Length: 187
Length: 187
DNA sequence: GACTATCTACCATGTGGTAGGTAGTATTTA
DNA sequence: TAAATACTACCTACCACATGGTAGATAGTC
Image 1 (cartoon, rainbow over the protein chains, first blue to last red):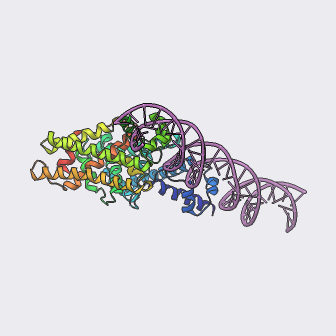
Image 2 (image 1 turned 30 degrees about the vertical axis):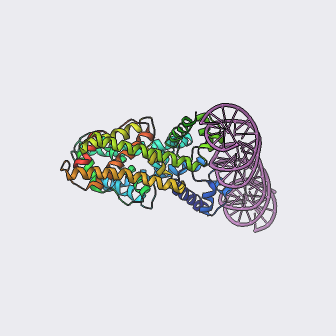
Image 3 (image 1 turned 180 degrees about the vertical axis):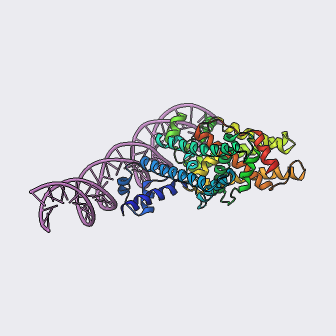
């Protein structure tokens, strides 16, 4: 199946990236995991960089879609942020690191295009969080406090950081909605 | 210089690990950076795993020493935690990731001994934070709130997460003491 | 004479990537 | 409609190079 193989490659490679990292997974690993020969992977993704960028681009698209969905389904800031928390958490559920976090860790060993995508990904998430918080501040749903941008930074920090700690210590200590509320209302 | 070389190797390799990751730096890179032949590195650290564990062990020692110093110099919880914040921040100042975070990212591609050290490192930091907070709760310096363990988890999450975000977005948005106080007093 | 720190010269293996072939499926053309 | 053509997805068999690691020599130091 044509499209199926490509999807399987992206999906499997994404998992590898989010457990081992970009450098530490090879076409050989991927070949074995998907059940296709190494050379056939090159047919779909001529270089590893192509594969890497495809993974991140697809992921960014997915997140963008989620953002739209959240905005459509939730009117209030807190609801939107809790929905974001939810998708962030469930994405890490299968014992996976956040994709952008995993990439960030080996940033300066990545090809330029992937470095740029990683940065773009972070900027996009921070941007959405900031805009969402600003919206809430303007509507007086939440206090301004230290500002939308700073709150966004804190929220994403907690989510990324907790993922890493849980992953490394094999704990399951998800961030709760009350933490989100603490930051949003008191930071 | 005998001891100097070993130290230079550990120091340079630590920097490489905290920018590229363990897998993505090679003995060749290290050789070039230190100005010594590849084979000579093997004289000091027979295997890469030896080098990796030496780096982490030395780092853990350093942190342990810092913890003692903090306890000696600061009587109150808030002071101790702010001192911790300070060393964490200054360690990330030169555009470096937290060592344990960088390792965590490629955890399942690491040799077992390094996986265990990484986990031990996190446990140690969480342990110290938890004990410090418990101490403060017993002395009524801070409220119990969601508990010492949970506060410790949040604090370390914020520190780790913010390091990654700053590193990836090339921003300089350090966590302020007021954030520590927010968590400690209101979480 | 043993030990330490370094070197040159290797080696086996794994890496991303290429060349070229085969079978099946569309697409064009006589 | 039938034959020729092109395209897709996969394959086997390579290649150059980088990887971590070893053998063995040399020179200086305890």
